[in-house]
Image: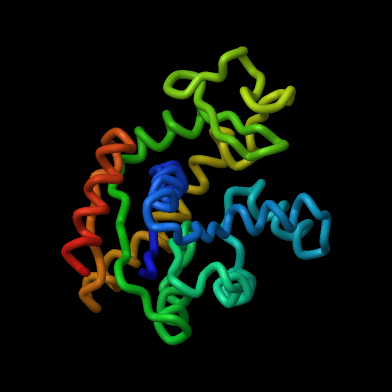
Length: 211
């Protein structure tokens, strides 16, 4: 099963992808994770990506496609995968259909104000990448990761000014994917404002229908 998760930043795509991995054992392929790995390794590409993300902009189509193509060619993707954060543009979506046609594109429907609330309160462990929230997913010790003695951080792209810019870019470049996937009859629309377990159940029902 090859799935695409798309929607506004902070819609919960990564959280749900991890839940579905536990059920279907197909990997979450997150462009965000792949980009952050490049940034952490301080490669030339990683430095360029870091600057783009800090400004709340999208990485170019060519870079994103190259990274995804290499990732889905690996053995753990042979039985399927969940693409999280890709495609983000019509060009990426069209190239993906030519490269490796998907089964379902799940659109995470959510309002901008909810996105701002979620992202402004998000905190990340710099060591393991675990995500917390100051209101809905608090760590046991304030400001510290439960699994490591690491101080939680705010990612540059989760700061308010970057969030506003990310939403503008999303509406301009990514939201049109909804019409594209409707046209090729591959989209399923999910209410992403619900509890993650409810959202997961909705998606599982859609997958069973497609099967």
